[in-house]
Image 1 (cartoon, chains in turn yellow, green):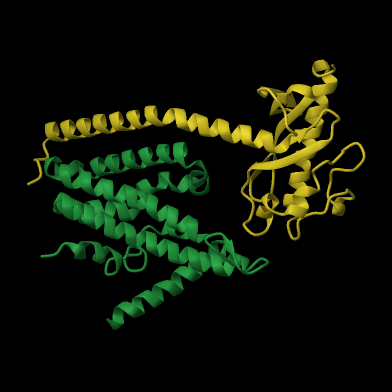
Image 2 (cartoon, helix red, strand yellow):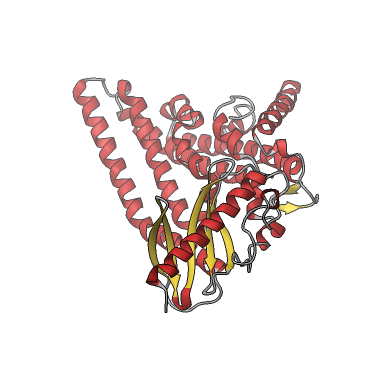
Length: 188
Length: 194
């Protein structure tokens, strides 16, 4: 009952199927483009709001290079910065959003993406004791490394590598912040 | 003759996970919790029903020698549509399942049902078969997810009832194999008894 497998039939059939399928995917793309952009935007806005004290106005996006790595950041009025900082954790890249206020104090941090081990390193997203250490952390007074390395941070139990990566990401963000503010861009 | 058996067949006799042992990649990788298993199952069911319907409709017009590329194109289209829809309306679910959504294209169950059932049956029967196999897959993944979540995290659908960590191995890959193996034994023992 199937159509005969002649070259003409096969070419016609495949062409028709591909055309129809492309049209369907194209329509789906057009319909979902706006919601997808909105969802990504909402996520960024939410993570900026999570790491910074209340602010008004629209965050201004920018990027700056440091040690050969490009860091994306969002600047809000009053000298608040939300800096995206990525280091390698135990299972792959660990990407954080670090909020730093006008005095150079870390306001809060949030994990944007990670691939740490479930139940061990992945606790860096939920372990309240670990995360809360970064709130109000003043890098000018305390040292941004884990206690095992002579710093002031408690590591997550059995996840020293993840904790180190987290601390390094925050400390890189602080360095980026200083580069941004001391470099004449934010000296008002 | 009742058509109900097309649904129940997919659920029990042709259960994709425990009897046919197809689609093991998402089965092992996404069942870290009951919710993840359920979501992955539903996503696969969506593709399965639609691809079964379309393939049963176009099968008579497709020359035999190009049927596999045609089926794969149809399946890939639905998967891409699903992926876009999930990104747009359930971004958090998409983030958890991520890579495994595009991988539905190469899930043996979907192509298996297209090749083994939909191209020989009518639209209604193919839709019911897709529903049955999809439900079977969803139920299997959810059950594996429930067991792994209880043992590994001490919680169920995110509701934590045992404080502390649980047996971490069950959240990771070895636990997936163990749970799958034991559930498969139980399921087949039950089938053999009937």
